[in-house]
Image (cartoon, helix red, strand yellow):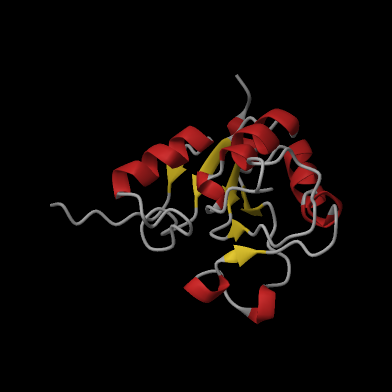
Length: 155
């Protein structure tokens, strides 16, 4: 067994990188809840390299971004979501092509995927129409493992 006394566990965030915000809006709020990639291929060229380096360095977990990826983006060279859309416009924690296909399969990440605090309840961008249980199921199906900072008022 590996000696964990000399190990640092780290969560790298916010996958796949947010970059500058459209009109300076914050992704914690409805008006800033999306990422736009204005330059063809900019996701792979500018946003993914830090995550590739973190994976190669052994990061233990990756935390997806609140925001969703906008179909107003330039072509990013990924397999399309459907015939009319490049992306499914849901927060990254709910997005199977980004978590399972890109992060897990293509980038070969083996660690934990954490939701951001409130990403399931308060800032479930693109999935607000789903019940809390459906959001959790969608995030699990996308490849999330841990749901951070979720309030439970049922007690």
